[in-house]
Length: 443
Image (spheres, rainbow, N blue to C red):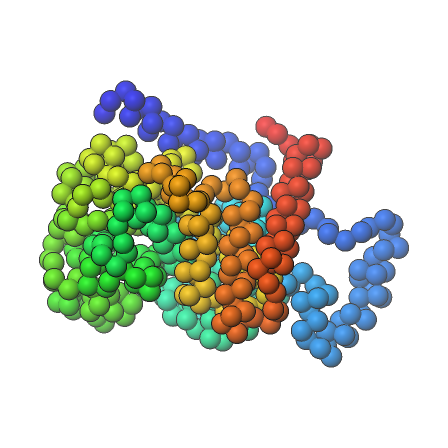
């Protein structure tokens, strides 16, 4: 490894070092603070007993008033059983808490959404479903997180049918949304069309399965997709999959028209794009395999916490566009660009579910946040610094939900954008003010 690459690897390891120092310093990343006035102790007669009984009675008579009288309208539960955490796998509910707290922080700072980490001490599919159903009256939405497959699929499907609020699995839908947005702009860089490209997909977990579904809806032809799992390419002869994973088996039947048999190397040959969400690297993807892809290949190496191949190695091998899931490299394909704005829009129109077409709308809007003349090989997606990105996604998703007649509130794009922008600005201002006043300490 060259000295330059050695420095890059050390820099890539720096966030983990800082994380171990700062987590115990703050002892958590979120807390609950009041949003109502408390000028004196007399105010508690309004917010609690006896005054609160009046609004409880009103909600009893008209349950929909819960959205007007409580914070349900802006509350999301981040639910996990800790069985598929980042690249760490089944580490349990307690060890998953830092991730779920981080998710709640992103929800609040980027989308102005109040999110609560809920890590469940069970791996049982039915118990998870039952628990979420019992909890859902307290929330405006549910974000499922880091739940292993194949159970994550029926959990999501069941809860979407049986809960009166939107239920979303970020590892599936969130990853697919942002990946599609990145692919849309990466294709503009290399001058290719979705309907014409061949795509190699490394890893057939929940994320890549949902990505495959979404990019096919967008226009990528199923027969031009070749997906791999730990045993090789997916194809019609993979009867080992048929009984155990219906979602993966469906892709065995729909994709890989040529019946390519092999592993990652064979799947990547002559591919225009690589979408990898598999085991953390480096070394999962070899530079030599990239050299055998089509001209000007697109490489998304998005395993966490370390990509399947270092981005500089992929570029040296000839990749025209390289993206990872990390914020310290260019072209971060990260769910954080998608779910805060999407949920902002969903909550603001009180949508009853989140459809695949809403996800595509969000992806297109996210991609459009960069004008075509500003898209570059090293800049295919906007960054989280731009507050308006999340407000635009919120507005687009809200309007789509209204058009699909799954929203209880009908608001225009301009109204949704303005409202989202104001809520997100307030959220960031609260954090900035607390830092300035040293209510949040600076180590």
